[in-house]
Image 1: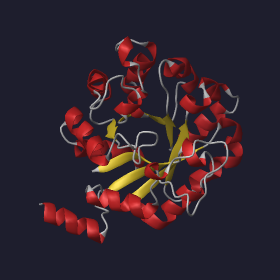
Image 2 (image 1 turned 180 degrees about the vertical axis):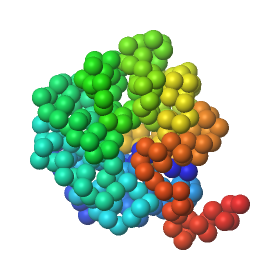
Image 3 (image 1 turned 60 degrees about the horizontal axis):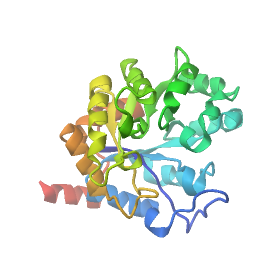
Image 4 (image 1 turned 180 degrees about the horizontal axis):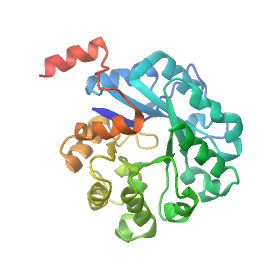
Length: 281
C-alpha cells in the first residue's frame, strides 16, 4: 500500500518557523515515528509533503527525511511562484518529485503571479508534479491559468468541495474536468471538507464521481498523517477505512501512485515491518 500524502514534523530537531500555525505535540511525528506508523500498517512507500503548518517554506525537516529514509519516501516542495526561479533547485534533490501550490492558504491570487507560468512550465519540462490544494470554487478560477499543456497535476483531498452545493458546483466540476484531461486526484481528507460528523458519509458521492471521472488509474489514496488540526478526531486506521469504503482496498490504487510519483515495485518495509507483514499473513 502506498500513502500519497503525509507530513513529517520534528520540532525537537527542526524548530517551527515564525508566523505559521504551530502544531501541538499530538499533531507532530518525527521520521522514526512516521516510519513506525507505515510499518505498523504495512505501507510500503509514502509521499511526504512540505507542510504549510509549522514549516511553511523551511524545507530542512523534509530534506533530512528524504536523506535518511531513502527510496521509501519521496517529497513535494512548497514553492511560491515569486520565489520559483531561486527555489526550483529544490527539485534537484534526490527523491523530490514536485511542487505544491496552496490557494487554500495563499489565496487564488497565488496563481496570478507573473512567475506562475514560469513555474508551471519548468515543472512540465522536468517531468515533475504540480500539486494543488484548492477548496470551494477556487479550481474553477484557476483552471484557465493551468494552460493547454500543463505538467502532471494532482488535486489534494478530493478537491475539498462543499458537500452542501452538489456535484455541479463550479470548483468540483473543474476537478472532474482535470480527470477527463488525464490528471490525478488524491482520495483523502474527507474530514477537511465534510459537514457531517465521522465517518463523513457526505463525502461519498463526491469520491464516487471522482473515481468515475479519473478512473482507478489516476486516483491515489492518502492518509494525511499526522492529521494536522484533526489529530484528536482521526487516526491512521480511520484513513485506511475511508479508502476501503471508497475503493475496496487502498492498494488497488498503488499502480496510479507509482505512475504519478515514480515509486518502484519493490516493497520498502523496514525489517520490523516485514516481520509484522509476515505475521499478519
